[in-house]
Length: 236
Ligand SMILES: *Cc1c(COP(=O)(O)O)cnc(C)c1O
Image (cartoon, rainbow, N blue to C red; front, side, top):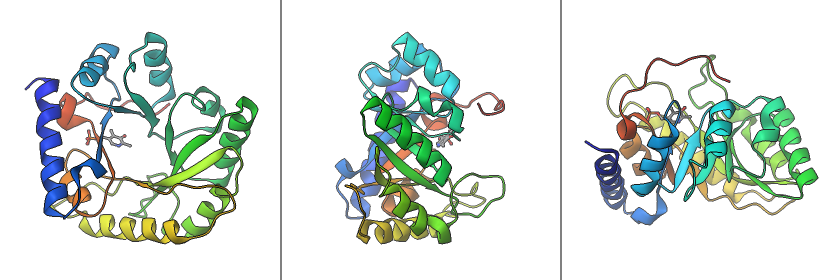
């Protein structure tokens, strides 16, 4: 299938999953996870209706940005982010989805203030408590959210998670349900700054329908859209 056919097919599955859950399909955005894709393929996806691209690596983001590959879409950053690379993203990406430490928050806030912009962010939660994964542990989320809600230059928009690789179909339901509860919890808190907690980013190629059933507002799809990727290099 072409990228265009894949976008349509995935969108239809999202819409059906939303309706089955009693939700409006318009509550769920389809984000293309573009790691390792060429600028050409990214343009093709945008031409097929993709409105949000998710980048994992700052180096690839810089190259595609310089190419003008994202024209017509927003870009989110979804990978592990090092503090010394924050400067390449702030003011360019509409959402940094992978904020998981006070130090990173501080650097993003400082950069945004120096540019006179406001950077929207999500907090990444390590919902499966995996040693190999980034993200704040659920019990530390409240404290990080309060800090995000008090840091000038950033605006807290919600949460992101990458649950463990599913071993059985439907196996991530409990993680998605836990994420939804955390999302509701932080949405109900009071913050010093203006926040707009409306985004719950969860669901990938193998489990996005399950994630939509549990309240996801943003699904990040790579493989189902672009096909299988070559093996991963180290992140950067
Ligand atoms: C690669 C990636 C995805 C997409 O994964 P697929 O299984 O290929 O759909 C989603 N989120 C993040 C953070 C990723 O790195």
